[in-house]
Amino acid sequence: MKTQLPIALSNKHIHLSQKDLDILFGEGYQLTKFKDLSQPGQFACEEKVDIVGPKKAIKGVRILGPVRGDTQFEISIADAFTLGVPSVVRNSGDIENTPGAKLVGPKGEVELEKGLIVAARHIHMHTTDGEDYGVADKDLVSVKVNGPRGLVFNNVLVRVHPTYALEMHVDVEEGNAAGIKNGDLVELIK
Amino acid sequence: MKTQLPIALSNKHIHLSQKDLDILFGEGYQLTKFKDLSQPGQFACEEKVDIVGPKKAIKGVRILGPVRGDTQFEISIADAFTLGVPSVVRNSGDIENTPGAKLVGPKGEVELEKGLIVAARHIHMHTTDGEDYGVADKDLVSVKVNGPRGLVFNNVLVRVHPTYALEMHVDVEEGNAAGIKNGDLVELIK
Image (cartoon, rainbow over all chains, first blue to last red; front, side, top):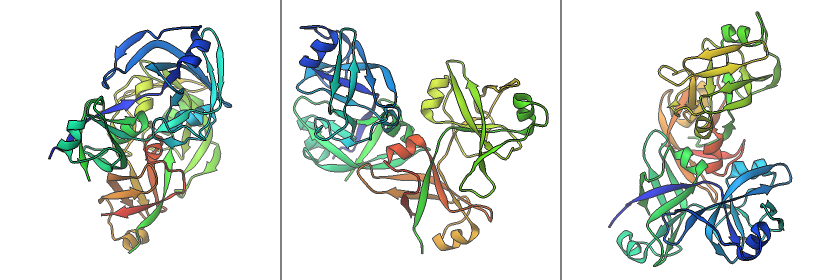
């Protein structure tokens, strides 16, 4: 059974619906790829927007493509503090009863009522990885990081899908707390 | 045997030598207490200084008193990235071969050759706590945090001294990675 897998640190970013993209960048706007991400079909965009919270704004937050059904902002707990909104840890896509904020783009603004989440740490796995690592979609596992800031992340959600590539995702604060950088290998423990 | 203890998140701060305080604030300057900290005799000061790194400056970093033998800046890995210096995880006081930076105060500037550290997580304990928790000065232990962002911090240094009060210290990134706030209880495991 395999146990080692690569980890990556997610910086704050935004996924936009086409409806909100149209308002922020103009009717029928198409996102421009800046670079591919590790998950197949996902890409970082050239475009950025400002998030305006009740306390302060965070400028120039990168958009990730392609567009999705619902707009979702993924931020850190420190970012939530900067914006002046509660930090709510959620799995991607689970945005009911989460804080909103104003988004400001070059062509318009959107006042969103929800969508600001601190993404729960998780592991993406292709279907064959699920077999190799002996885990199933929606399993909660633990992951050990070695080194001077060594720690064990508990409550790590496994997401298995034929379009996913093997990688654990944490936010920058979680990565820095563990003293890791993109591509470091960590150990899945059950 | 006791296992539960309170945790606190340390934001970036600076400890100054009297020599550097004199340069930054004027000859013979005395620090002004803003509020007492949990460790007996330690206090946050009204005074703040700017840290100027090769990439960027961080303005208004709070000084903690009283003055010490050597100037030491305690920052997060994100702060080190902002400043443009390597992040070096060290125990407090262990500043040989660490990055330096320029400090700017209202009356002068100091170009320091060392002293910028990311403080290693640690537990302060009074001598009687050491007995209650069954640990000794310089022991390395693990500490478990429960909740949605639950994790186990490994390599936690125990510091036992008759002037210390019981408290675990982590930096803000470590605290946010674990989803904890000041005063939350965590569990010492060996």
